[in-house]
Image 1: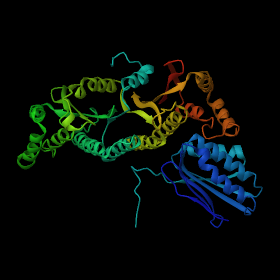
Image 2: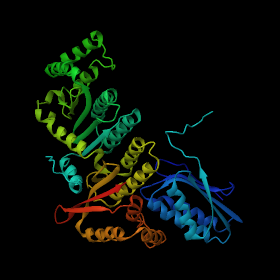
Image 3: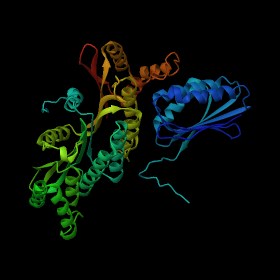
Image 4: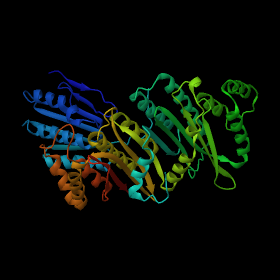
Length: 134
Length: 369
């Protein structure tokens, strides 16, 4: 099926929905003015995917930040995955010092009953983090 | 216009009122870095593009902003005790740029002389004077020879005013105020009203007293919201968890204005004010915007409700709303106020001030300790 790819901007996340990749991905920042509208094509893709899902779906959330209107859309995605009736693994990433992002993952895990793997990633802060380029 | 009786709750309205005639006011008060400077210029650019400002005016505003900001960064007090100040205001097509920075008292005489000379010169001679200074004058240890000031005077058609305010035996504040006029030079009357500095002096005093770090007054939209977020992120770099919380609260508060504030018919965006001030170790985030009178009761109930809940109850309420897909549309998720209350761990303070039969001014204050 046709992948859905959206390159992240200052207020929208990077989204990679590609069945040939090992994981589906939402990453970086999600704070669009209209999250409902932004996430619409993602649900369209998921509904298509639901017609013939893989035996196992791995969905990686590697968000640095999301606003409340995005939170609602994320909970919808998770409930949708739950409804697939196939094996689902959620990889929930959080920066090591970001207790709120960690707690959000725990909250979603508890509320959806999905299988969550919590993964900590190094802190990215302009002050003490240097990007190494080739 | 300003008085010292400003109490916390009325501050948003007082500041908003003081900017009432302005289409845009943007003030930054704090330490200046290259990044902050770039972001301030970007914010002004976004705002000028939005209102469709002419290329000619934009160019003048830019060069005056660049020179002014350089003056501040060059001469700022690195201990952070006496913070720099930059303000840009737009009113009826006129732009006003004001800077405040520290100066050693021993340098006042020279600067005062230079500025008096600049003010006395007609534009042709000012051009000549610029060349003379460029060629002949000795460069001060900080790298300037007053060329920046002459340049600003030239670009503003000599609409500059200034003021020194003594702090102690060593230092003073240097106020420098300039105006960019939309009228062609030849049609211009010498309007001294435009270059009055006393209002900005009182504003600076008020902002210092209330420890206000940043103010944006104007039309709110997603674009300038991102810009303001970038500035705060930069200003708070290295503050870890606190930075995240403030960022978080700002997004929700500003998007409240973008989504629910009353629109300005003629322009793109919703009028309002946002500022952050500090009290001891707390950051206080403030917003003000217009709401319809018939929305007030509902809004009050919502705020009072989240204020009445304890930590566990808030958590449960958040979960309930998160999975309530009855409220799920472009405008609303039903989570914003709960999030504000949870993240700041304080009561939300608010007030409504009636404007007319139709609308009121709504102020919201969120304190992070």
